[in-house]
Length: 235
Image 1: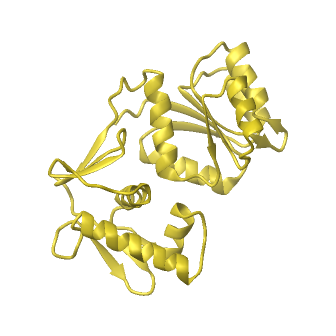
Image 2: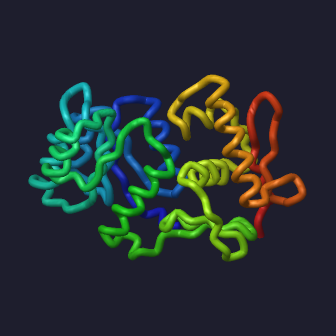
């Protein structure tokens, strides 16, 4: 895993900042968080980063000001990823025309978010197309191709199943409530129907990856609360 990647983040919502920080930290990337445009302007006076993640709407303006600084004043061609609650086509087109490279909608879906970052870093030759493959005994997770294999044989998964598996493997041995899974993967829906959705997806990935109690790597159910991916120490 390459941990010399430097990322600047512009986000005024503390909860979203925490999600982004956790996501970047899980990949070993260095980052600087700024809560407003004034802060990031000061930051950019001395430092160019490998990637910029910019919220579009800030208390003191729009990310368009920052894009202009990066592209015109700094002359940097480093990738810019816009993240916003606005999904209007006009807003997306405006951001891309100004010089952004990609646009992702909130709430952030962590696996998609990581995949977009890897794609931008790869296109800017910071990874030279060598996206890391994480190995957990007989299970391997290829983040670049978004594929999971058992003993080298690829397992057919839906996008949501892949996201759920990566989420659990990023939090080995943590007890995770259904509510947190709903919030982080399904966008915060609640109720019996959505809780059942979590249970169904857990059952499917448990079967597809043979994560039952008979194996060292398995998903344990705490009835009435949630799940834990039990992962032994790997040599």
